[in-house]
Image (tube, rainbow, N blue to C red; front, side):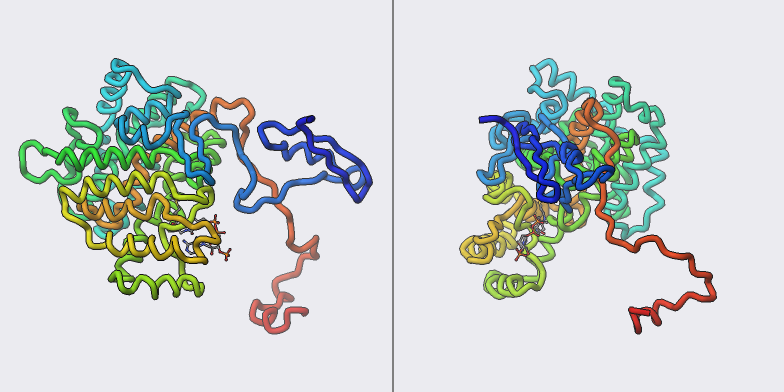
Length: 439
Ligand code: ACO
């Protein structure tokens, strides 16, 4: 059976044979299909990339129908159970799990990149006391580009590696500082004796005690949450990272752009919205009525549905297990009752079953974060910390891919054809045009 696709163009009766490779055709091959000599050629039209692969990637594998997620071939469940976040970061970036000595060196390198330049600390002072932490995070990551102008040399592997370490080391510090800024608390410098998650908790919550001791169960739960959020192949923010990075912009501004994409409520911002939704529902008894409202077209169930998963999001399963560990320390978050009831009713309801809408990673994560003491405004920042690793792994892959060029989609132009210029005194107003559109 030949790995080809035969296309007959009914406009010309011509027949074309296109190669199929790994279940895809190259859309550029369509261009030779012309209606007449000199025709531009056929294009693919795919708003929102519903069925278009923009790259080849070896980083993350998802089977959305079966609910499988693997980083570099390893199942997410095993990585969450057996690894630390920095171990998984190494795997995502370098392709293999580190040996003990490689891990030690890697952890030491990241630990020695956690400090922020004092000007960056002062930069944070410029934000209003009630600025959203995600806005502060995005802007401060972008501002690092001014501190490290060497980062522009994106083709030098050693320079790239240095920026990768800087970013992974500094994003928890920036995140913690946005939180301290919103409370008006003094910033806490990183503590090199602590693990990555324990140091983050230290920078968030240390007050006057000489040494902050994070609860080990909470630090481990946070580490697991970081692992679960580290990468998710070509999602909205990763696509932005690759797109901005394809112009050879430095990784700081590219990560800031990716974080901006993450902040939207349909993407990483959903975790914050889930908590608002649970607050709005208020009690277990009101879940059914809320679901009817959603089915009638008023809003969405936040934390439900996914472009790729048409089955249970495997991360949501691990998160539920992690929640049990956290609640043993913090006590049960009362919102869990509402969330469980919502999941129960939705998974049994024709509307959600037919559309294959399952809880996604954001559905339960916020409930754990809240139990740990985070305000909903911080949730998406907590997502951005680990996803920085995924963005960087994908960026590095993109830079090294000889097939990649500046990302520049085509369009189907549906606007006006060429028009005669109208002098200003002869132009009709918007209101007049609206009143008689044919004039
Ligand atoms: N609640 C109710 N209905 C939904 C939901 C939801 N959460 N999600 C999708 N639907 C419905 C849509 O209305 C649509 O119905 P229709 O066929 O009758 O028009 C159908 O399911 C298909 O949905 P689309 O919007 O076409 O799916 P798409 O792949 O474009 O969107 C998305 C995926 C954005 C995640 C969507 O499911 C959603 O908005 N969910 C809520 C926000 C959310 O939780 N986002 C986090 C995603 S995970 C992440 O980014 C980390």
